[in-house]
Length: 394
Image (cartoon, rainbow, N blue to C red):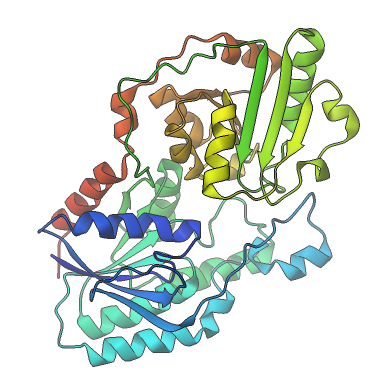
């Protein structure tokens, strides 16, 4: 089975969007049933030395963008149009699209069983539509994020209607959609009225099945670490308040929360929010520094949207945390898909009150290794292959 994969972000790109399909591609090299040709942007670094991977266009030079901070106003709405419209982005004008089309035109003699495009950016969908037409193969659209129906998007009446119409127009050639969460799958099925598969992001590292005890040993010295971005929908204020109140009522318990983030947590907090606990901002860390800081911690903190708007956001961070052998304290909506994963794997719990925090700290927690392995990248690769094999080709 031969697949043309269109993904602007691919190894060695140091962005979250490159990890999923880069790992699937590496797994395919050990599998004689699935073969990929890849069209990607030209990322600096140690590229995959394989004729199947085509790095097209000028060398990319991306620096990490800063998160939208505490509130939405007219100014940042103008600066961040993706807050209210997602079916159109600046990649619509990318020269990379033309580079991909030229490659497709030059290789029309090739036969593909599937065209797969990974959203975002939008340019992937545009190239995917063109490839489907030229190769006459089923088009699979991988929605790592939902487009116009993304839960956290501002739904301004006329603009939201327009956004949905453009979304449906741009994706009308897709034969199969993929999503990364159960809630996302349900929303996509309802909106597109086509088949939608569920392929989780998962993790690529090995799990030590012998070391599955996540019980907190030192309950009087709690060292939490958060790794990732902060912003309107990942605001630490609520959980910091709960931790601070716990410290007031348990004066023999020392609590330190460290943030490995390019965003400063103190931008979200007042002095009284953390007068009984320590807050440390570590800034943006290298992978080596991050590993060292995680080893100092006995609790991993995960932040997501406290409202139901973010329930579909099954962040890849949760799978990354699995490797650290520490319990995960989650601050998010109680009905979030994140809550379902941590409950199924027994790797942590959602904390939204002092009582829940006490229960989290005191819990004897043995990780469910079998359920964790369900989310391994290799297992999800198997699910992807099964889905493609069973999907009717035209």
